[in-house]
Amino acid sequence: MARIISVIGRKNAGKTTLVVALSAELVRRGRRVMTIKHGHHPADVDKPGTDSWRHFNEGRAERTIIAAPSVRVLFEHAPDDYDPIGIARRYLSDADLVLAEGYRAAPLPKIEVFRRAAGDHPIFDPSAPNAREWVALVTDEWDRPSADGGPMVLRFSDTIWLHTLASLAWERALPL
Image 1 (tube, one colour):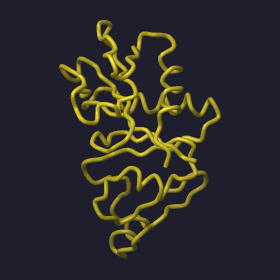
Image 2: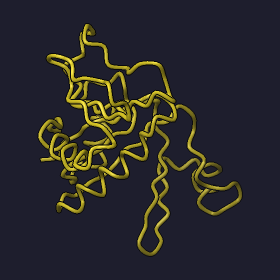
Image 3: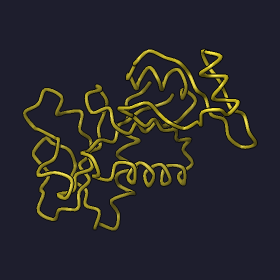
Image 4: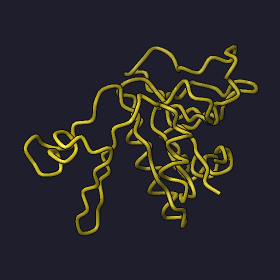
């Protein structure tokens, strides 16, 4: 059964870098990993005038797939539905683990990336109603202790942080 976990953090905290490293580690362990990248603006991955762009935009096709050797890209007109669980169930249900970058407000287990250069404090708030969704806080700070009942704090400088995080992500991911 597929599972899902989100990687959150402030802008430029290193979310994508963490997703890439975590995905590679989980794949190395034999897991089938798929990802979702949350965006706040329309994706611009096709060019006006190309055949695929014309199919999708001028032809108003509901879905267009670009099928090329070793890669496929799906374009789909869809309502503004930012439900990562629904997206994962529809498109990524054959994954072992889905890493969803972003989706801070979604009711998902969360790994937060916190770097002082990106913000003064983590997003994690121990008094928030959803505080139990936090699985780990990955940081470059030396003096950030684990809060009682809060997420595990992992430091980028620790040699085993990625191994530990991959195990935590697998264990605490939400079953789809």
